[in-house]
Image (cartoon, rainbow, N blue to C red; front, side, top):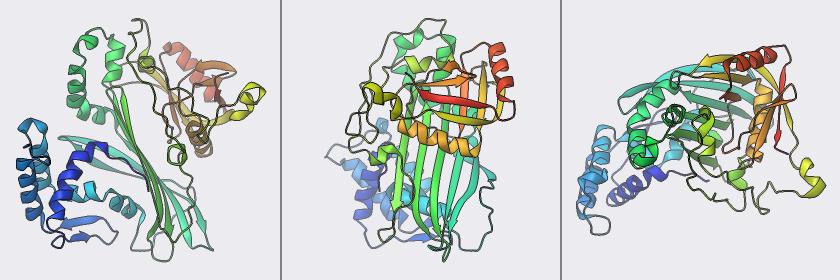
Length: 394
């Protein structure tokens, strides 16, 4: 398996040392679906964590400013965060498990919603389940789950963290235009999960998850893949989990663009990543083979609407692809990570974004263009069978 939780590194160190002191006294109580519901021995764990913080992992006591004691206080309020930090895979596995029979139609989406708390801000989260396929021979079902946090509420919840980030670049922040500042204050969170579930007992046999959080002009993405050792892998994995060598982009701050730039300004604030190296699965072709390397994809549009952003008060064209085209676009964006692409509507190039992250939900937002032009493009895309072409930039 492969996963990344960099923000929980300090917490994991504290928890690991705390739990190690009491290896036999902790019991995790699970729901019938496998979700952690209770943890015994919490008092011992927290007490030892306070002792570790007071003495310091390296003999240097933790200061109040370090945030360690805030973390401990949160664990006292919600002990299940201990399980989340040390066993993040447990909840992922439980996501697709069921203790009772359920009926689903293939490719028929089922949406639910819930609220999550982020620093005292209630953020609505929409979850969409889809049964992708079944295998009668292997007695398995493949499910997909797409989750999206409400953009306005999640952005509101992240404003304190974004403000702290901007404090570190106070002089540079003074020169931001209104559009640039609005872009920095936007935040989003999405989750894409695929699960292979046993039809015999409802257990999860394989799981793949991508969680993407964007805030303050930065993006944090975590990848997780869990597979039973006695079962063959069947889920397609992102290139980042299969590449022989992971590329580290050369990032540095460039001069601010002109004040006339549109809302897509953050794409120009850092140097675009270099193309993947030849050691990666997606290699860079040369000569006449370059055009054949990754073929353009034609995508069918389900809906196209021009809306006003509640955060920046500018207009954008929100394009939603059909399920089949969304899957095609997902594969394309994974294959061209770190490279510049073009999006064409009626053979006209309307956007040339650098593909810094895979697009998993089949949604494209076109901004930074005059509203009349956006409305005209929306009309073109509302025609039955309308398609857009996406390709590598020649």
